[in-house]
Amino acid sequence: MVSRKEVAELAGVSEATVSRVLNATGPIKEDTRKRVLDVANQLGYVPSALARNFARSKSGHLGVVMPYVPKAHLFSAYFFSEMLSGIGNKARDSGLDLLLLFRKPGERMDYSSLFRQQKVDSCIILGARDDHDEVEALKRLQQEGRPFCVMNHHFEGQSFCEVDADHVEGSRAAVSHLIEQGCKRIAFLNGPDIYSNSTERLKGYLIALQEAGIEYDHELILEGNYSRRSGLEASATIADKLDDIDAVFAANDRMALGVMQGLRERGLAVERFPAFVGYDDSDAAEMAVPPLSSVRVPFYEMGELAASKLIPDSQDLTPALELTGCDLIRELLSTELIIRASSIRQ
Image (tube, rainbow, N blue to C red; front, side, top):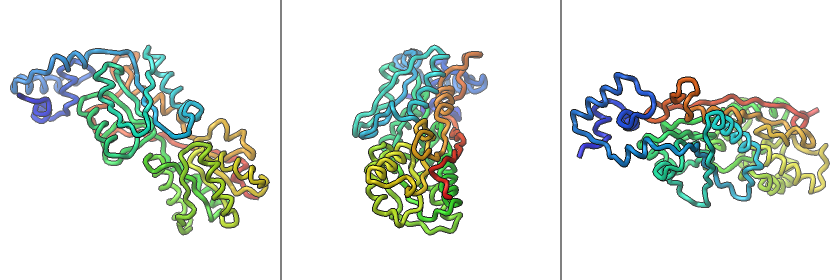
């Protein structure tokens, strides 16, 4: 029996392209369509009727896979609410409904089943993790020609459609600012390294130190889980190191605010705080005491962009971007450091 893979190899296209041609889904260049059909006829390839029906069926749902973060209330998290608002705005304008799908602790996501069961027509994946099972599940989606976009995560060496922000530069700018304020012993409260955002923030931190000729000290690196509570817990360690710390850079505002709360609860006056910079520039940053310097990330725009890659354009009813069977597509949006009183040293 001839496989779709054989058709793709002989035609010089991806399996996803073969699927779109044979199922008449999505825009295809005429010469590509003709080449695939000619090869399919030459090899006598006949696609499964079941697969054809699945490919043509529509649920009207844009799926959004949400991460599992222990002890964190996702919908109160600024960056999730902003991203979902951007995605939802784009979906609403296109007449689609959002279907939120939640990971369970330790669960291996079978993304393909969401499409096979006709729950979603396309999918945005938030909170992806750097592990083998995750990569294989996404590769399977790609091989099946399913439209999906990974948001706020980067898989090194993989050709997935990704929408993200430049967290390396955002982190570098934050730490460089602290160094310009005279800080040399900068504690970094990061998130778990299973998330690419965490490794990218660490990279930016290290670049800033290297540029300033400051030696890296691994004892200044702390790990939280992006929740305020993990910042509160880290405040105990930071309080013990205050004589050796000039500043604290936190990988998100919630952890930064948790540290500040913990220091206050230990009786430390604001005037004795180390310099602080957070990340995300949430609404709470401006209301903090002192107002928190933070790296602004365009989460809403990221959500709109990710959705636009999966939703047909209203003018010509063709997908805004071919997602499967394409070269690496990674779009990075710029970040911006917002300086407030928390990081200014007199």
